Image (cartoon, rainbow, N blue to C red; front, side, top):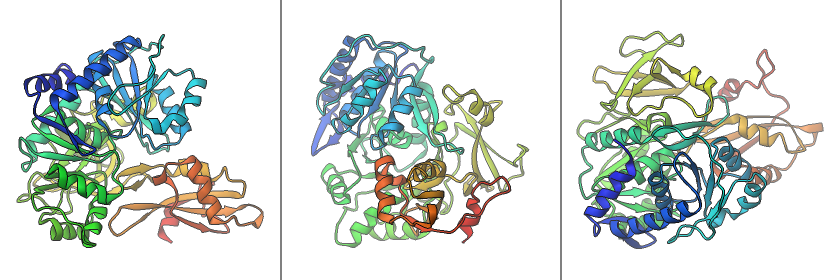
Length: 491
């Protein structure tokens, strides 16, 4: 497979009147969408963007986002999508690390302009139905990677985001394998695209997959308020849901309060976090179907395994691995364990990344002889179904997104009245985890919780802000003086 943009251009030109994207109450045909792609390509070309360059994208889900992705690919470049809700310092740090030659912003993120100018990063302001207002010249050139399509930033176990480069080939193989394996999805179906497309699950499965194949998508810039999402599902006649457990909790909560969805929904697919049994029962009550749970990683492009049909699903598992993914379970020394034993999951295959961008140390730590260490504790039964048991690290899962305790602790310690801080995840009945912070005040002067929350709101994305704050006299420590999070979780 050469490039994804060629595959998408081919289907858009062959079927220009087919529905491609439902957005803001309007259906975009494949022909109309490709017209926007060509307009953006011309603007990028005029700005000096060319093969080997990286294009940063800081914008919500919208047709223009995907027009920029495809335009960059047509010119031989790669894209670096980044969560548009992240604070300025996190965005600019990632874009510098990714060596972007240019950044395209949504109007809502014009607060990034001053910092981008200070860092000498050229930028353009994206619009809904056009590329960007200003052309920029003399873009900085960096050596690109052969076949590179996208660089995603994902949470690492040490608290530092990791940059994962994925190729056109790996994304294509994963998408095709998914559509071949998930039985309910058929030609002509309409998928819900409400997950952030800056995240690999939203990008690959919700956004890219329908454009690449004979499918359509109902695209939403945000999942909130949920009432708008339900109206979009009804209006667009969406019949396949793709989300994370928290999203399904919001949907079922709204349905329990009088909202409705037609019974044409034929599949509900979930990833990003373990799906609660109780939530599956509620989903079946209101939609007539449960969930097809899957499991993926940014490094796997992203799907590793999925329950493939309602007749064959096993609740509590994430299904068998895709045919393109080879798995093994090992102990902490890397020795392979017999089937059924709990251990660390290792994977390899054509959709698995080769390493991390600009980080040989991390690459050497996680990639060995073609295998990738996922860091997840699993067991695999005789039928090949994978059961997730726990996370090897302290990473907190909030609505399918990872939160580094170290990042939140660092922000808390910047508050003048915080002496020490430790952060853990607290399990909720259905929505995964929320962030809890234990704080030791300075000089016995306890700050108001509202002041801590206000401080965090300025420096952290909303899902990273502690929902629970507990003031304590001291923190349990390891022999090396580090906060002992395991002890805090046991309290």
